[in-house]
Length: 301
Image 1 (cartoon, rainbow, N blue to C red):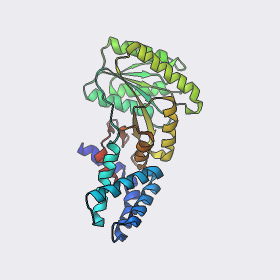
Image 2 (cartoon, helix red, strand yellow):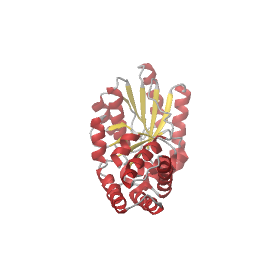
Image 3 (cartoon, rainbow, N blue to C red):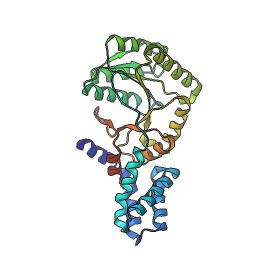
Image 4 (spheres, rainbow, N blue to C red):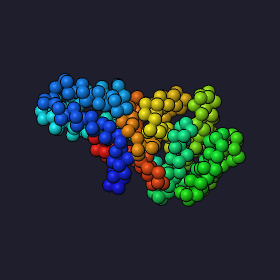
């Protein structure tokens, strides 16, 4: 975990400099904890891709906590804000546990790192001693199947695939048959990421879900949405669109390393009321990890 915390800390450097630089300035000039200070801190958060409503909510919680803890020194405000952020990110109950048998539908627009995230999850679960199968059900994007096959080889897990342009639900059906026959622990299903045609996407996801419910309804079935951390508030808009077409159980946030927009993690959580379950802070196969709210708060502020 220490190694991952260092990666998280390094990955959030630009975001931290963005937030902390402005925050140090505000706290350095403040003589007392008053309404002016709260308003300036709120502005720091709003201009750091945390979003307007989320920033207001965090500062309101900060006000209450400072009152409750009877904090009077300005230099203690930063630590209280860390606590607030950590508690805020843990608010949503994580109804998410990868135990045998688990089926994960991985959703997201093209380009956010969806297929890469599946490869990294496969590697993570395999290392935990789980038997993993991949279903290449993104059959419309050129090379998506081949890309997933490369990840299957890297993670040393099985893959079920059809030809490009095949029916995604048929791929998932065959993958479920293999999943049962091989007594595997986790099935990771790649899905198409075409948000511009929501009706088709919704029909496709519903069809896949019907097949899973019919063939293996008593499995633990989750839908995880992959979002690109570098896209800032656009990630929130994307997530809201996907929420209209799919019931989401959690967020995988990728590409947080090297972006100044890491504050969007807070905005996503506030807007969607869905927990962030995995976070990506690097290119390496082991750089997708369980989301830890306290480590995130410590690395952010």
